[in-house]
Image (cartoon, rainbow, N blue to C red; front, top):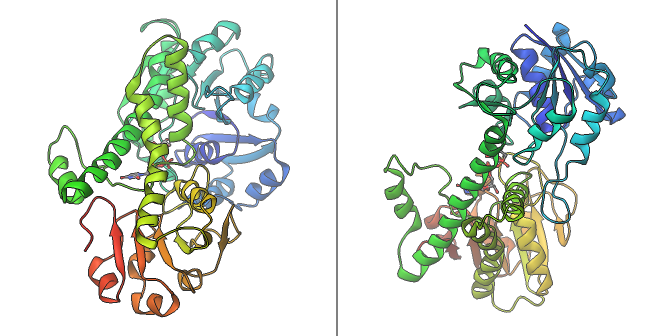
Length: 427
Ligand code: UDX
């Protein structure tokens, strides 16, 4: 079992540290946020992530997991250092590597001679190679594929482990890459050991492909509306083809979250900087921007002029099962609705403070009070169980736009509502 340092206790770093401890390694996890380090040291986990708090407590209890303030203790006396700091979007769309570079600067002179530095942060193709050229230690890329709300499961039972060392296959760093892949032996996942640019690209290529699938299905849904087809039946028919698969084919208000918007922009920026034309990726991003406008159009058609219209928005997070509002398509839609003069109330099981133009209320019924229309924006299962007779009593208007095709059409229409789904005939 190895001694591992993890730099950064964000959702990727914390999951990585905790799950490596679970696999039997000894882990020191560093962060610069004093309040976070002291909370985590008491097993208090801020993130809304199933099983994470329980495994943090287990790691602390076993002595295999420790949280420290400042990076030094996680850089010295370890066999591997995992760099798990953010790589946000820079002003030009490219990934901003300031935090990664700062950690590597600090690592120089502190990490032991045999220590392997592992870049887990999402970094553009070529970054690991560039870093390796100026640091006298093995450096490898090992991207993560953790979904929010499933992070622990995705780490402990991943579909693949990807590790890449700089240089062509078979170069010196390969041994370090194999050692990193072995850290995951307990997960039983297949490992791909390759060059670092390929490993870095697997991450971007996967996220951008999934985003492309979603933009494709969102356009398809619009087409379905025009020809009177049902997008659920169309995607079901598509999904039976093994080459397509059924995942990531549900239309929605657009894709968001902390990864897809950032990674699509970053890969496009990489392509542009290298003079590679990638129109498919540009269209994927543009289609997603257009999707929020399309949802506003559907609401306008259903409710009438938006100036002064009172709208209840159900679901504000970027997807169900998380409290994350970053790049949430629900908020992008809310911003456009507000710009047209709509007055917005909202409810989300994981959001209690007002966000942007949305006054957040403690229940769906409270948000719907006196509303002219209601819009479902996040697929929280509890919205499917709402009592539509009660909602009808609360609301003034009778229009419901369901951007996640979540609501049971019969129950909603029987209560007297006009239901507008996405990509399906209006019931
Ligand atoms: C994603 C990747 O899945 C993960 O592998 C990567 O490491 C980080 O980015 P996450 O951001 O947690 O994970 O979100 P994900 O579950 O992939 O959903 C992304 C967006 O697509 C959400 O806005 C979601 O609502 C939307 N989506 C997803 C759809 O609109 N329809 C679908 O069928 C699936």
